[in-house]
Image (cartoon, rainbow, N blue to C red; front, top):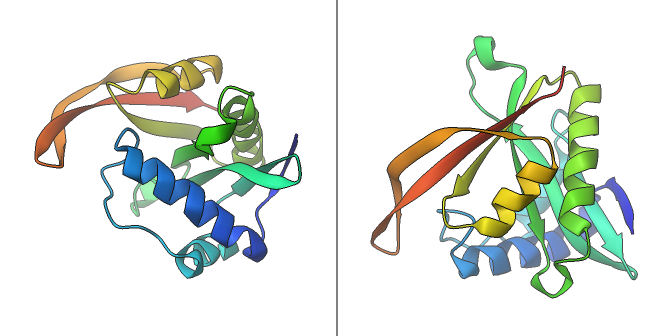
Length: 160
């Protein structure tokens, strides 16, 4: 497996992985699929790391950060996301991506990674635990997905 910076030509594979994860309804409140052009624009951003894992010559997953807030006080805090192709889960792809994302975020001067996980997403909870995150708390009935309120667990990892 190889972890590297995402490139524009990864955008279609990244969109496919994200959209499949979104359709599972276990990782995000988003319900609108993303197209490769949207993902290419995110990949092109210079401030936030956007990484992919290659396994057997194909994009197996991705990890990225996004701004937590536009307020200056939170400039060093970022939210992070990790998505792995469903057919390639259980091979350490997510663990490798999260470790490299933390390293790259620290290199870029960020000091904290945040995550918001559905309370029912056991796989993601195991991933962040392996990645050195701690549970901060739970937002009860934080958002609605398909008409049902969902709880969200907040996790964080200080990098510096």
